[in-house]
Amino acid sequence: MPELILHEYARSGNCYKIRLTAAHVGAVLERREYDIMKGETRTPAFLDGVSANGRIPVLQAGGRFLPESNAACFYLASGTPLIPDDDFDRADMLRWMFWEQYNHEPNIATLRFWHVWIGEAGFSDLQRANEPAKRAAGLAALQLMEEHLAAHDWFAAGAFTLADIALYAYTHVCEDAGFRLADYPNVQAWLARVAARPGHVTIEV
Amino acid sequence: MPELILHEYARSGNCYKIRLTAAHVGAVLERREYDIMKGETRTPAFLDGVSANGRIPVLQAGGRFLPESNAACFYLASGTPLIPDDDFDRADMLRWMFWEQYNHEPNIATLRFWHVWIGEAGFSDLQRANEPAKRAAGLAALQLMEEHLAAHDWFAAGAFTLADIALYAYTHVCEDAGFRLADYPNVQAWLARVAARPGHVTIEV
Image (cartoon, rainbow over all chains, first blue to last red; front, side, top):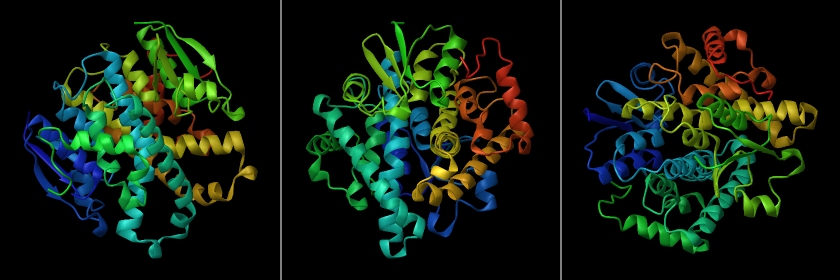
């Protein structure tokens, strides 16, 4: 594997996913921090040299750049047990990773950002208008996880995979966004299983 | 591969992606149609028997169910040239597929649904409030594609892959949502390349 550089904002759950995957597969990442609150991912240098999409994380591998957190995790975990060998199981793992980006992250991660980084007093009118729908969708996402985990220890393939890493990142900090983990005992037990895996690292690194 | 059933709403671009992938790999799909406008994916029978997430598409393979359009495409294309062998190229293909679900579909597909299925006169206050931001984000997504395609014939790996199929689905009907393809000549040329591939099928099948 070429030299790896993670372009990141460390407190982002999307960036943490990549560090957690790297820890589990033994990949060494050089880390470069960008302050998203100062617009450091929207500068010409970032847009031209790192990612035209203007967002972190971006995983740099030698001279190539890979945006999108779950794609970066997939790259790092290629050929490891974090990605199932079976075609259906591998697709089922990706199913949860796509679901995370569509149904979980835009609600739970976005509300965390709004509440912790902006604060309710600073909400725009559009944020204020969207908060109830994002709250309801975030609750529905946590409930779907709760029901799945009633019958399964892990999200896909009967094993700890990238699906668990992707979903762990923002679920374990969902109380920042005003969600209550105590309402989801199966989710809490699964969070503890993830955190107990050998090689686990916390978001605070 | 086990018997395949696509639970779908045929006019959805997310469902079309799966039919297009199946056509390219020679997989035969039995199709079951659900009228999303009548809530047919929110019935107890659907939630308990097909997908607890209450959305189409879901690809059924034998007795197992796979929600999420891009995951279903990945399953069908396993072991075919639609998925690159190289680890970085495969992750880069997934990067565009995750980007599609995060930056493209929630804007372009959602505006298509609002404008064609609901109609502006029927917009809720929240839809009306969100339309400008979704319009701007959809324009940014098309612009990012335009710039990428200025230097590349395909999205990933220098070849026609699932990234092209995933992005084609809603891009080729983006005028339904009020976007103008004439503003994006590189995108138009790429759409023509996708449609010219042997085995291509249209959304109207």
